[in-house]
Image: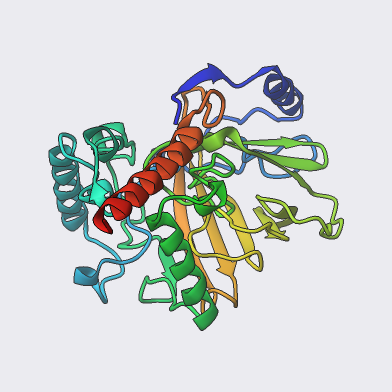
Length: 347
């Protein structure tokens, strides 16, 4: 995939300008205690809604699921969190010079080339250096064991078929994931899930709409806030509708098209996201996924996101990307070589 290289364009600049006109500046803190804790009265836009705008960073070392060696332990102590961070970062640093384990060994039955095997080692990753501020042992908060519920029979069949397609030479681009095809970012959602890199998104509020622009594949959701019903057209990022529950922004998304960016899910996926300002620099993000054709019950994860003061740059995943052309050409070359070898072997 190509590297990020362009600043978000003029359309986005215009949206920011419109949004900035509707925001009431945040006042000074009223007490030393509030300043120390970074707590503040929730800033509001001109229409009285909580101001959640800004660039938010959701990098974290906290895994989505609770590791087996931490079974039964919901929260780390300060000392345990520091040790976990150090251990994880030391392991990542050692991996920087090594091949990505998922790409080592055989590729479609043949030895992996050095270029492919080392295309995405730890040097290119940007997962962050800290666990989430709550020091939870998993991002999943429900079920209580911090694990994704078991797959249904249909979910097992679908994920097995997807895995088989990834292992064989690709018949066509449909055999590859939507992330690899630059259709959806692997962490862009909905729901947004921390990944290897590009863990930032821009949230804008304009009259009647909320806008979510993800760094990954620069996908944008323009979310109506006027209580209109969901549409009937299925979309890659689903059909999102927003509303307020007190000071919490709630985004309800249905009508997904084919695969989604959430591994294993189906077009029947239903996602409910919640965004709440915790303090000046923290946005609490929570999502619940319900897909009865994939998992036996819904599950919920929570990610405290941190304000990013830096600008966000475009991640140009598809533009000038020769990856898919080369991948399919390589698949045909493998098939040709296998056919020629079989022909020689039959003589």
